[in-house]
Image 1: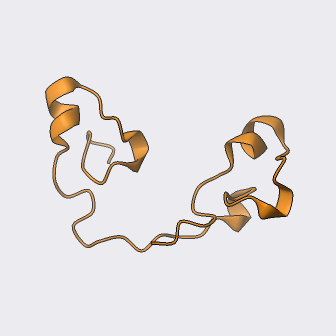
Image 2: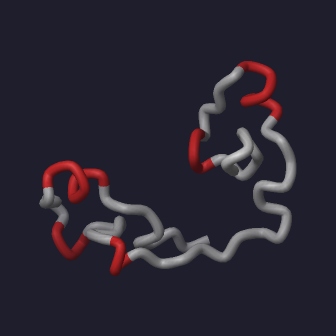
Length: 70
């Protein structure tokens, strides 16, 4: 799966600049964001790790449900 420009660049968001400039694989602003084609079952099942331990090592990138906002 191609994830090019599917997330905002952390440096760009925090500092307003990025050392990678036009070579950066992350989006420099909302206008550059691209959508991701997801599996039809994406976020349809609760995350075992999150519901057992209260946290998930994948965080926002997890493909499973963490709470009511997912």
